[in-house]
Image 1 (tube, rainbow, N blue to C red):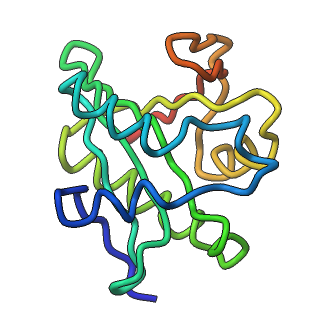
Image 2 (spheres, helix red, strand yellow; image 1 turned 60 degrees about the horizontal axis):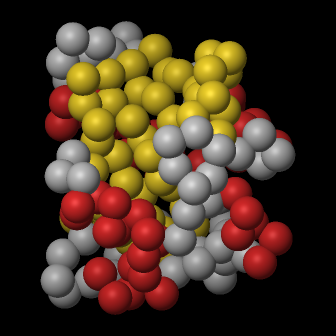
Image 3 (tube, one colour; image 1 turned 90 degrees about the horizontal axis):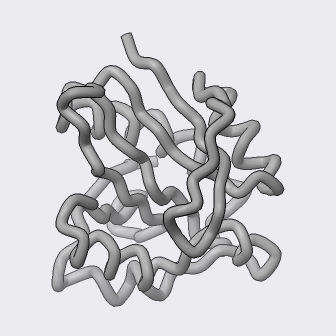
Length: 151
């Protein structure tokens, strides 16, 4: 695997919008079209395509950096349903964490996940995230907040 993270641009945004999760997962995450609009209009989110070589397999969005809190948010993370089950989530998550930390020099990364998405919660816990007890109700999908404390 030749995994790469590339910013979403005028060249690849349509392909990113075309990515989707399985029908059973739709309740757990906003659409990529909504996420791209949010990242562009709110001016503090960065959208990235997740590539294996030249093949787009997923999408991520991060940002909402806080200097005072030394933190950032991994606001979206998805692998297209055609590529799920191939280990991409486990391979891309540490790359995204490293990418975010490198960009912001943050000490914490937050994310929110739908409370019924047990597989995602387990994935994030496997990489050191823990539930904070907070709820994120700022978007169309309400989630529980998880935090990763970085060294």
